[in-house]
Length: 323
Ligand SMILES: [Zn+2]
Ligand SMILES: [Zn+2]
Image (cartoon, rainbow, N blue to C red; front, side):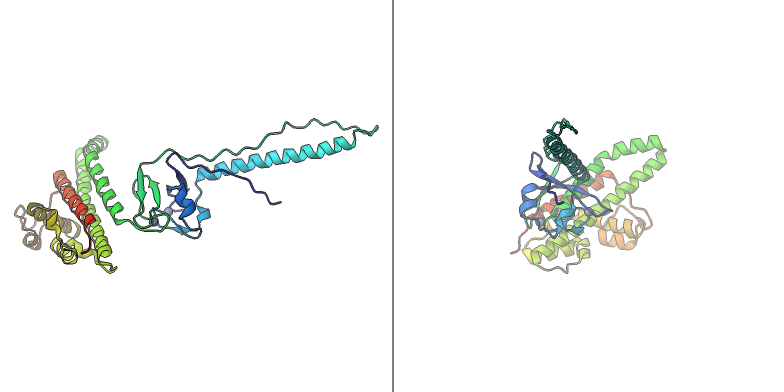
């Protein structure tokens, strides 16, 4: 027996449809505009916005949707079985109605009309993204890396999300420190928070490098751009100037540029020399506040200033066009 059970799937109020990545290591849940799912997404290839897993379009049911479907199928089967029983017994009852030796009376089950409960969606989510490449609209909690329809990796999205996440991290740092002091002791709290601040510098720099390299790739139409070229501020600036006519000084003051270069150098020392200042650092950064052998200290204000400058520069690069 081949049965088709009609199940209605409704989008949420904003028109989104819940989906879940079938990769067992991921199971990331996201939303996609119902209309885009029906009209744009291919049957062969759906991309997970988080892990980039690619699978056919029939694999992306969320746990809630599977449970709801099973419940509907179960009710349908039960209802179907009851009707079969009703019909069978009714036939026997009918055929024996005039038989004077055997008498079947049969009181049918009350027929339950089968109604699908439409599979509703979860409450609306925060981050709505429109793919720069194919226009598909999707929604995620936090950040995502790939368009579910075309797999496009939005460098803009990732960069600005990362900057926002770091800003939030900096805002929660005092609270975190107080909590850690209560939980452990002052020394531990201090070293954990110091570690977090230092890694923030690294996160900002590496997010910028990747973003700048991706912008350069898009603007130049090449795909063999070296991310490390954008570790050196003057070099990256020069590359954009040659390509588009504008260097970083279009958006940043000379003070900001000096500060940016210094923090990029400090990050290098933190990452590759355990934060210990060497002569090369002093020569390249022009930073007079440290002697050779001292250790770099990162303050919250440093991270905030670096973040603000990098964000400003990122906004500039976003608007850049090839000339
Ligand atoms: Zn995934
Ligand atoms: Zn897309």
